[in-house]
Length: 448
Image (cartoon, rainbow, N blue to C red; front, side, top):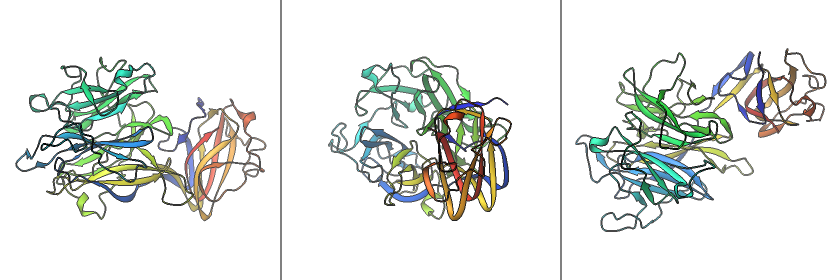
C-alpha cells in the first residue's frame, strides 16, 4: 500500500482517506452545530423578506458579512425595491452591526449599509479577497454576481481595492454556462494555484453543482459536475465549498438540500473533498430545521458561505467555528440570520463508546517531532495511541503499553509514550497510527 505523505498538515476524519480499519464500538460521527441565536434582523427599509446569500469574510481585524437586501412578494413576484448588496460588520464574529457607509442613495439618503445597486450582480453577489501572490493590487478583491431580466443565465465578474467600491470587469459575462440563481463561490485555490468557481446548474432534473478553473479569472476551463460516488441524486441549491482554513488541502462544503416535494423546505448538509471535484457527501442532515418553526418554511434554512473563528463563551476555552443560516424567508416577515458553532475541526469525529473501539490508519509519512491530537473524552473515557510500522507491527518505544493514557478535552493534546513526545526518529518513514478509545471522540491529528 502506498504511503500518504502528510508532512505536517492537519488530518481530519471527515472521510475514509486515512482509515484502514475500525474495530469494536466505534464509528464516524457527524456533529450538528450548536444554535447560538439570531445575530442580524434584516429589517431595514432596503431589506425584508428575501434577504440572503450571506458571505462572511475576515478583513484585517474585523469580519464583514455581505448579503442581498430585498423584499419580494412571493405570490406577486414583485419586490418593493430592486435587490441591493449590503455589508454588516463585527469585531468578534458574534455581535453584528450595519454600518452607515454613505455610498449608495436609498429613499433620498445615503445613511445605509448598501454597497451595490446594479442590475447585473446584486441578485447573489459573492466577493472574495484575492490571495493569488501575483494579483494586481487594483483588483485585490474580486466577486461574481448573476444578471437580471434577460441576463438571468449569465454571471459577471467585478473587482475592488477595498471590498466596498466595486467596478465591473467587463460588459461581457463570464464565459460559463449554468443556471447561476444561487450562491456562486469563487476564490484563488492554493492547492491548484489557479482560480476556482462553484456554481449551480441542473443535472438529471436536479439542482446540482459545477466547477471550473481559471489561471487569470478571465478564461475558464469547461465546467464539470461534482462527483458524489454512488450517492443518490438530491437537489442541492447552494454549495458553500472552501478549503478548510485549518487544513486547506481538504475542501469543506455545506450545500443546502432543497426538498422540492416537501413545500421547498431546506436543510444544510456537509461534504468534503481532497481534489475539489470528488466529494464524500453525508446524507444525514448537518443543520436540521429543528424546533424552530421559522426554519420550516420555503427556503428558510439555507447554510450561508464562510467559516470564521470566534471566541467561546466558556472562559479559557479555545475558539470555535461559527457558521450562519437564515430563517423566515418568504414568511412575510424580515429574514433573520442565525449563528451556529462547532469546535475546531469538529465536523466529524471517530466516536467510540465505553465498550471501546479502535482505528488503524493507512500508512503515512510525516514530518515533525511530536503528535498533536484534537480529542474529547468523558470523565471515565480514555485514549491511548500506538505507532505501527507499515506492516502494522508496533514500533519499540511507541507500543500501546508505552502509551500514556489521556482523558480530558482539548483541541491540541500532545501524545506521549512514557512521558516522552519525541517521534523525530520516525520522521520520513512509513508509519501507521492506532488509536484505542473508550467513550471518546477524535477529531483530527497532525505532526509538528
